[in-house]
Structures are given as C-alpha cells and as structure tokens.
Image (cartoon, rainbow, N blue to C red; front, side):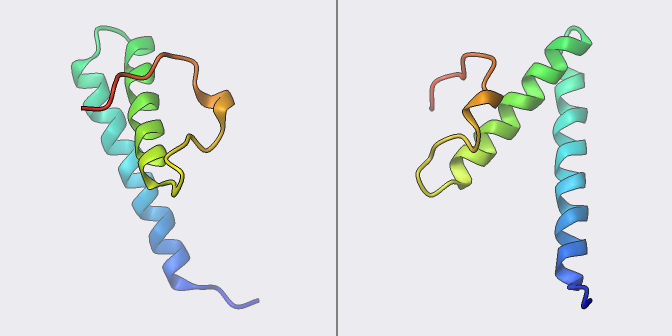
Length: 70
C-alpha cells in the first residue's frame, strides 16, 4: 500500500487547526462548556464555508444557534 505524504501533512495541519481554535476558545470562555461550544461553532463555520453548497457537513452537529454571518 502506497502512503501519500500529503495525507500526513493534511492530518497534522488539521490537528494544529483544531488545537489553535481550542486554545483561543478557552482563552475567551468563562468555563469549559462554553469553550467547547465556541470551538464547535468556529469549526462548523469553517466546514460550512468550505462546502460548495455552504451547508453544514452534518446537520446533527448543529446543537446551538449559529451566529449570523457578518
């Protein structure tokens, strides 16, 4: 099985992105639950914006009202 090196880099980039979003969310949140909520909203917004149809990847992921687009 041939391993594509770009897959490994993409995996690392995604881990770094999630870690950075989480770090920033914890800086601004008043508690852990709020930090997870902020991080999930940011990640959902990124996925939605990356989607060709501008829709969430999985509607079951939306637990909170997303803020309006600026």
